[in-house]
Structure formats: structure tokens, C-alpha cells
Amino acid sequence: MRLLTRFSVVFAPLCLALSTAHASDAHWTYSGDQGPAHWGELGSALCASGHEQSPIDVEKSQIQPQKVDTSELKLHYGKVPLKLINNGHTIQASAAEGDTLTYKGTEYRLLQFHFHNPSEHQLGHQSYPMEMHLVNQDKEGHLLVLGLMIKEGRANKELAQLWKHLPAKEGQEVQLAAGLAPNLAKLVPAASHHLFYHGSLTTPPCTEGVQWVLFEKPIEMSKQQISQFHQLFPDNHRPTQSATGREVDED
Ligand SMILES: [Zn+2]
Image 1 (spheres, rainbow, N blue to C red):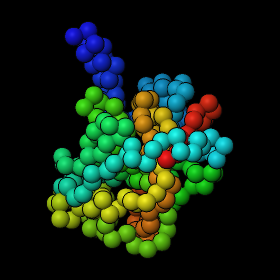
Image 2 (image 1 turned 120 degrees about the vertical axis):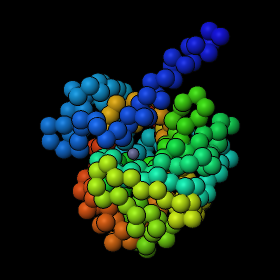
Image 3 (image 1 turned 30 degrees about the horizontal axis):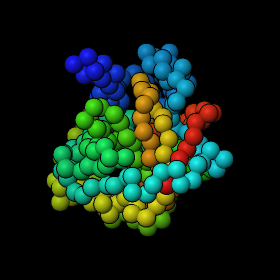
């Protein structure tokens, strides 16, 4: 029992953090007086004082190759009904139950995915036009976020229907039936190396203890698809944070 109590205390802040991570009523923005440089003063102290913050610029010298076995990460993704929300910070697609993954033997459930313009992470100082985050949570509240870089190229068929239904106004919600939802098994690159590191939410309250998994292989979207999102969110990225002392493992 004592162990259980301790666990619930430890993990409760993460659950709280998740529910408020993209809350539309939070008073923070991506520029100006309430921009990323001020998040620490706006009631999210960890954004300024944390030591394992995200995103980061992953440099070659940080990467420890073959530290993770490729079989450690298994995705069981497909098509599930989605609820799209324009929360003022991004378009978030909340996922109905069904999509799961396992990492090092622990099962995580996909809660939601959302998008940033431009990419938040950088790979070897390289930034991308967009980045997609898929937020997964295990039974105890631990978060594991998959980060997909998006580069300009062919139109992304899996996201085509979702893109036709992007809620343009803050607070607006749109239900997307499974038939119109992207098949995440096809969207996420099957053959890619991954980069694993410990970081945080990239939005207030910047809660740490997040397992990040970045795909080295980007996905593609057309110039038009990218510009459609850019029109809704001209800039919704947090700048890279110090990666000093942090190891990045590769499979
Ligand atoms: Zn994100």
C-alpha cells in the first residue's frame, strides 16, 4: 500500500500536466510578453528552472548508437475516431481508445496528437517546416511522445481528410469518424532509426519525466498542406533548450 501511495503522489503531477498541457484558457503564447522566455514567470516555474527541458537540438556527438534494441519499440496503431480541437495553441486530435504501443515491455495508449510550426526539435541544427507529436501514456501516467519531423514533399494522403476538417477558430471542435482519420500505421515511417531521450512537455507547465522518441526519417506533406497549417498557426514552437549532460540513445 505504501508503495502504491508513493506512486500516485509521484505520477499525479504528470496527469495534471497533461490535461492542462494545451488548455485553451492558459495564459501563455508563443511570442511577446507571454512568450516562451516568460513562461517561467507565468506560473510554470519549471519552464525556466528545469534541467531536462524539451525540445532540444540533437547533435551527433550526443548520440549513443545501438543503445536501444530495435525490438524495444512496437507500435500498434491504426485508425480510430478523433476529436479535433483548435485550442488556440495548435490543432489537437484526441484519439478514441484503440491505438497503443509498447516500449521496453510497457504498454502505452495514444491519447492525442498535434502539430507544431516550425519543428520544435532540431536534428544536427536542422529545423523542419513542421513537427507532429503523438502523446502516449501508460497505466501509471508516464508519458511517451513520438516526434515526427515533417518536410515539404508529396501531399500526405493519410492526413488529407483531417486537413479538410481543421477547425479554424479557437475553441472549435470537429468529430472525425475512424473512416476519415489517418491510418497511423501508414503515416508513421515503419523503417526509421529512432532517437530516445528524457525531456519534458514543450508547453507550460513544462513537466519533466517525458520519454521522447524522435523518428530520424521525416514524413512528407505538400507545400499547400503545410501552408494551410501555417495560416492557422504562424508560429507555435518552443525554442530548443539546453541539452547539456543529456544522452541521446539510438536504435
Ligand atoms: Zn507538441
